[in-house]
Length: 218
Image 1: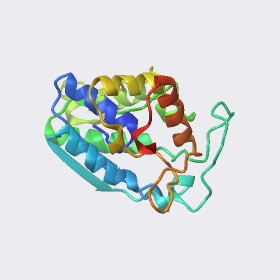
Image 2 (image 1 turned 60 degrees about the vertical axis):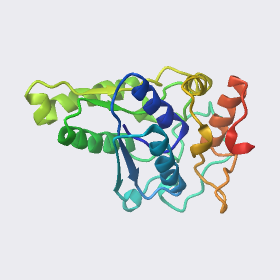
Image 3 (image 1 turned 45 degrees about the vertical axis):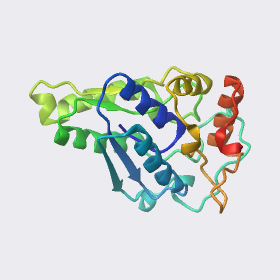
Image 4 (image 1 turned 90 degrees about the horizontal axis):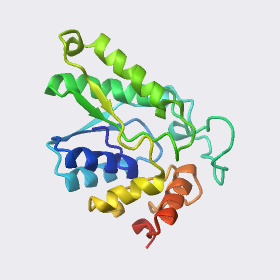
């Protein structure tokens, strides 16, 4: 399970657990400016009682190309339906993360990878689309010993067709405490969410539509 510490990955992991999977949580410290999400991932992993929580440091700041891995300003108050891919897109991030998850899955003998991508309430990232996930599954079959020997690796995306409100409702039904999570791309010095980046806006929209308060804002 790719576990970022955000609302979506927490919910996807909880769905996997509810479906009977043993969870091996993988969190990537990739040089993101919102590194507080790593602390959130630790809290979430504890709440989910994962079998193992592995943290890997893969510093993508050397590649750059994103407001999340550089000193470039994080867009604020951006219209969620604005055209184009925002500067918070991290080049090939989900491809890199899924590749790392695939490698660990081979080692622990897992044939199922969960990722909390969403193709409805999201910021327009190309690596959150169903087409990408299907393509990666084909790569997983072709590029691994497990695949060549007949084990099909599946990439599960339980949130991909849900709105943010539906994700929150599903998580609350599973008893999740979203106060453990972190979503903001550009948190303040005290860790409080900025309330204006895409991730904050999407989160606020989801809680409003679900008709429940965000525990981070109490």
